[in-house]
Length: 316
Image 1 (cartoon, helix red, strand yellow):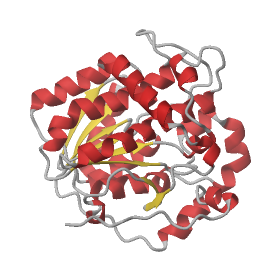
Image 2 (spheres, helix red, strand yellow):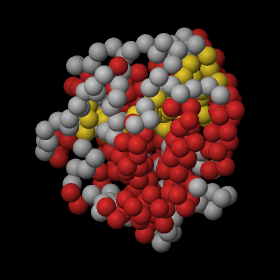
Image 3 (spheres, rainbow, N blue to C red):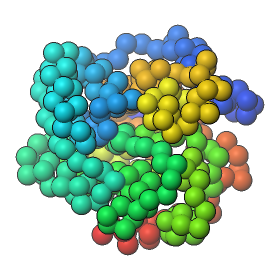
Image 4 (tube, rainbow, N blue to C red):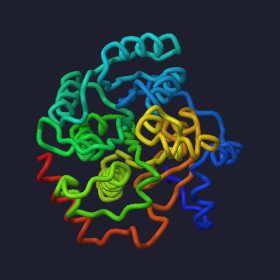
């Protein structure tokens, strides 16, 4: 089966591109959407499932008949969500407790799933947070880098054998429109953002790095029947935005998306037949988008090579 091209739409003005991130932008795009496909018991591993986009995605995938493995931190919320998802129609729900700011916990998730020896149809790397104060984890890694970049990549690589056993394995990496403001800085990333810390910019750097790895790996993974893509949810009024970006929310509240609107493309990418064989793309509202809105934010090939070298140093 030949995958659809999913060419990026013709570039619009910068203002129009950014307007697409809004609630009105989503609702305009959604006029052309069809209903989401049934999951038919597909095994979906979803991180960060107890709030925001992850919670919305868990509920939707449950209602479509998925078999869910939810990777979450909070045991009480996990128990409540497990019962809710079963009531909504999930074939089964399994919970793995993990704090993905810690690479050791990400490795425990991999080990647990490998020990279960079940194929994975879809891995959704959604867990995230925006930290306005710099901190290092107990492993000595800047927490945004660990949570938003290193752990998702570790999960991808560790779970690759189980994804390869699916009829068609898929990975959905949730990134951020904020990365459009950032050019990857390897010196900044390598320093752990120690000398200059700005929460939104650090968040965007980590998401940019994850998007780059998605682009770099997709051809070799596709040759093994695993298709990896990124998406960004636009400007969604999630608990994370409410707590970390109160000024931004106050200014933009009237145009923000709700969590269901932000998560729609996650679920579509996980299940849509038309996504079969599609890899290495960035999506917003079920449409392929450019990775760069400004040529000045495009990293050099040497930066990409340095990023992959850094990655091998950190997780090998």
